[in-house]
Image (cartoon, rainbow, N blue to C red; front, side, top):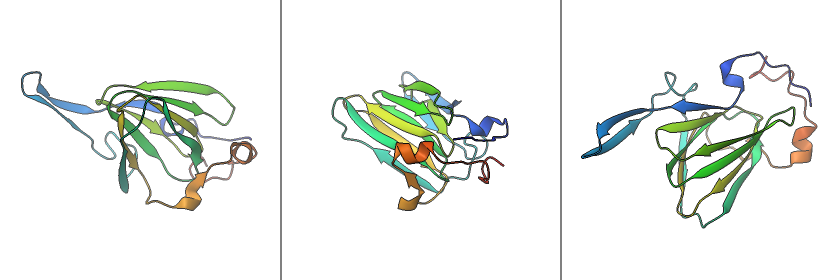
Length: 149
């Protein structure tokens, strides 16, 4: 697969620091602002909870959707695979941080027991936006993709 990306910050996964307010004696509030912290308009929010120890989720890429994944509780190890087969692993264990994932990035999420994630997405749910076959995903050419052109 070849991908002629512009070399911009929004074309690679990265950790985003979120605003936090409060104190240890009263607790904390963590806030997310679209466009100033999240590089897209938020169209959908969903959360994953009730995970057993060693729960694995994901195993897909999105064709158009951008996401920010935040571990609200527990730990989530996110393995991403880029178009050049480069693998990166991100450990989400701090509710003040989110992982930005652009389209076309393969992701696999490994949940600890009782981990809770919240995901901010740039699109409404569309089952056709998911690429769940890694072999097919590896054979795609995104050089004409509007996100990267």
